Length: 424
Image 1 (cartoon, helix red, strand yellow):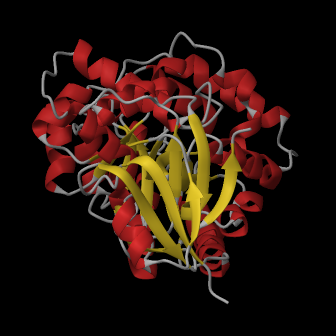
Image 2 (cartoon, one colour):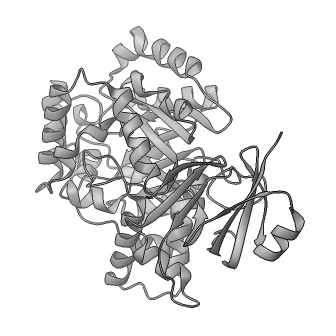
Image 3 (cartoon, one colour):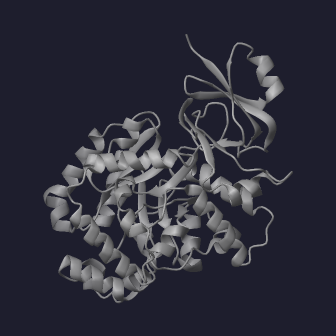
C-alpha cells in the first residue's frame, strides 16, 4: 500500500513561493505531490498520515561545495591558518598521514553530520575512488565529482584519460545522484589536461566543478607565473609545468579557465574570492554559478568572499561548507549566517538579503548542479527532502529569522519522505 504523508508546520517556506503560515507538504513515494495551507491539505487528503513538526519547514539544504571524505580532518579545519600556502601544506601533511583511512566511512560520517544540520543534497568532490558511491549508497541527492589533480599531459595520455572515463562511466548512480568530474583547480593540472578534461566531460555529458580564485596569489600565478602559489606548485610538481613554464598567460583566473573551456552552464566553481570585477563578469556571462564558502575562507587564511559585489552585480551564487579540513563544521546555515553578516558589513543595504541567501543555499545549489525542480524547493514533483528549524520567527520576518538564527538549530531532516534525523 502506498502511504501518503502530510508534513505540517507552523511556517512552511517553499523558497520558490512566499512563506505559508500553518502549512504543509504532502509526500508520496518519496516525492512532493502538494504544498499549501493545513486546512486545504488535510481536507484534500483525509486518509493521509499526519506528521506534526514544530518550527520552520524548508527544503532540504543544498551544500554546493564539500569534500565528505575529509570529515575525519577536523584537526585541520578547526584551526585558522595564517595564509593559504600554510594551510595547503598542513592539509597535504594530514592527507599523507591518513592515506590508508577508510574514506568511504569518513564520507558516510559527513553525510550523517550534514543531515543533522538540514542538508540533503551535495556537490561532493571525491579524491579517492573508495568514496565515489556514497551519495548513491546513502540515498541522498547530488553530484559526486571525481577529482583530478597533479596530472600532466604525458600521464593523461598514458593512462589517466582511460581510467577516469571508465571509472566515471561505471560509478553507481540513481535518479537523484550522479557523477561528474572535478579538475581540482587550473593551477594544479597541466594546461593541456584542463582542455582534455573539459572535452571529456562534454563528450560524456557530465558536469564539472572546480576550485577557482581561492588563493590570494592565484591570479599572479596565471598572469605572471610567479608568487607563493607558483612556488608551492613548482615544488610539488618538481618542475615549472604548463603556465609556469612559459612565465604566465597574462590572463586572470576566470579568463584562463574560460580559455581552457572550463566555464559554462554545466560547470560551477567554488570560492571565487579573488575573481575581481572582470572575473565575476566572465562567470556571469557564461552562466556559471559560484559556491561561496566563507567559513572555509577564514580557516585557510584568505579574505572573505565579496558577497556584496556578487549580489549587486547579479552573479548566480550557491553556498558550500567545504570540508572539515578547512571549516569547523558541516552546518550550511552557519555559512549562510556569516554571508549575511559579511554582506551587511560590506555595505549591502537591500531588504532582499535574507531571501537571496536562503535561495542560494537551496535553489542556487540545485541550479549549480543542474537539478532545479528536483531539489532545493518545496514544489510538486520535487524530492520530499525537508528540513525543520526551531527558530522563533519575528512576525513578517521569517526569512530573516531563519537566515540569522538557523545555525545549529535543525530539529528534523526528511529525505525522500523518510525521517532521517530527529533531534531528541
